[in-house]
Length: 84
View (tube, rainbow, N blue to C red):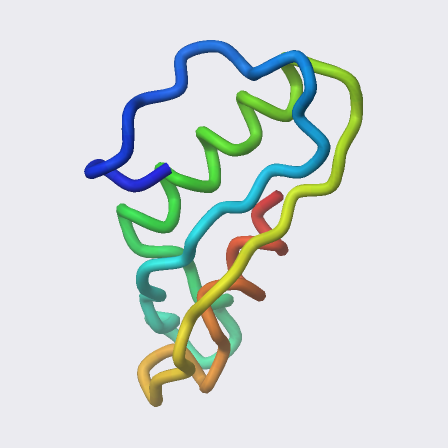
């Protein structure tokens, strides 16, 4: 789901798993707010969800994300999984 890869418009029939690459995380504005995916992580996660719903159930693997202090140490993959 990277821009440098060809855009997938329809989910291939033989899809067994969807892998979505993490980008960044926005830290919470207040103490008890959750961390949120940044724009790239959000749009990739939503696209993975669209591909998922267009076919039979399969796992979605959210990957990547070096924890950073702004996100309370949460990697992008965890934040994206919570969104899914």
